Amino acid sequence: MIRKILLTVLLLIVLGVLGIFYVFSDKSESTLVLMTDFGMKDGAVAAMKGVALKLSPELTIHDLTHEIPTYNIWEGAYRLQQTAPYWAEGTVFVCVVDPGVGTERKSIMLKTKANHYYVGPDNGLFTLVAESEGVEEVREISAANRLPNSQGSYTFHGRDVFAYSGAKLASGKISFVEVGNAIPDNQLVMLNYPKPGFENSIVSGGIPILDIQYGNVWTNIDKNTFDKLGVKSGDMLNVKVLTRDSLVFQGLMPYVHTFGDVKEGENLLYLNSLMNLSIGINMDSFANKYGVSSGNDWRVEVTK
Image (tube, rainbow, N blue to C red; front, side, top):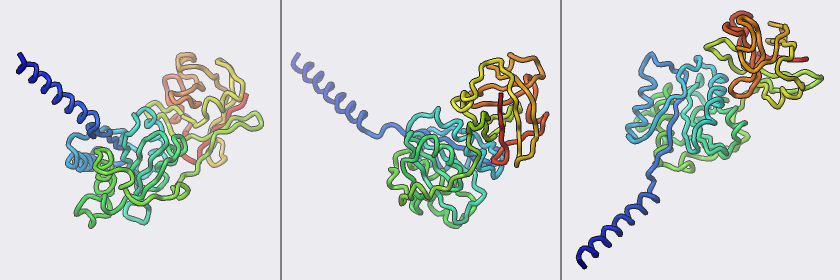
């Protein structure tokens, strides 16, 4: 009987020690999320994943997208901001839209106040997440955090620098402080773009992106800015779309909740899933019909 009691006590002690070890050990790895303009026609993305998983086979890797239009830093910045808020704290985003690869532009890691980590080139790609989440700290990736024996390669930093260093951070093999030297926040490269605003009874903003699958035009006019017009669902509003101050479209359309609130083929204004003002056509492409695109040269003005 005493023997059974002693064995039971010993088992409980062992289980307790194992439990403590489990709680305080670095048992969990952060998630790695990849975003590039590489496409999926070749093995570039697979090479990045291979580097990360070879370093840490237990690492969880997800794709944000690899269909950013080639060299389009702005669209990469927007897709990143569009998606990042829905990922848990500690997530590491490896982001590669890098037309300046191999030049003097810095390779960096950015930690935001939302406790997300962004790894990639310092070329403006992190403009929108830096603004929306706030910058905690920026570090330049040191040579020690580059894939071993890759120093002779100058054109695939996605594999050799960003995937490797991002995986080291996500797997807990290095801390953020060990990434490299800190860079002052005000040295982070930021893109210029039309900001949303309200002046002289006009709400205005840029067209950062198209809802590409359906041809809807997404503005960066947020709900709070739009509400300054004092409109309600069903009101008819005058909409102008301009590029470099040239008028591309002007017309009246209703502000409604969703596409089915207007007849098929009719224009509408609505708030998209990001709660930003958008322009569409029920069952058609507004962008294709009127020749509207996106980027820093495009803007929208809305009045009663």
